[in-house]
Length: 191
Image (cartoon, rainbow, N blue to C red; front, side, top):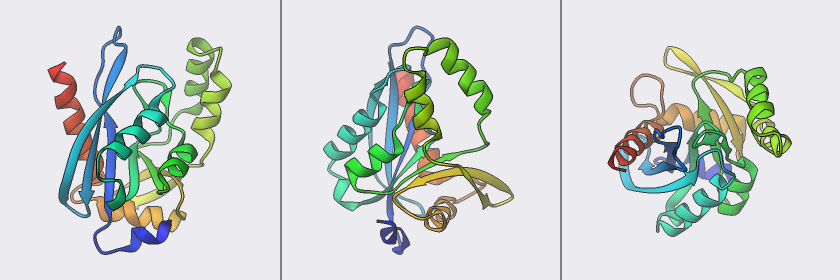
């Protein structure tokens, strides 16, 4: 699967969630399809349960139903959770879509704090959420003047690092994720 990432202008779908309130039941998620480095080919939204367990299924359904799946070469996520602690199963997402999945975060998570939150708020399914969070190890990718933390399924670390670097236009944040974040915030503000 990873070889598709070496094409001149791979099409990537960036995924990020928008803000939600303490009493919100659903969180808006934006998906932006980009032909790297900077062409936008499509945008669509879905939603996930706040602190739910439907993120992976909702992403699969949204991407399959978008009309863009055939052209998409990879899925890029802003982190591994959406709508609070609704954890994306990176392996399950990659297998369902038959595409590499790359999760990017600005800094290494404080896993002790994550475990504490899971123990406090998700006692009944803490083990499942923890396994998903820890399923793929993070590795550092130098971008511009900084470093991002990346997890990958369906491609090599080198392929994922190259994809992340190619997706950055300015600064050090991947353009598909920057755009998805903007769309998610705008869509959430409408609700």
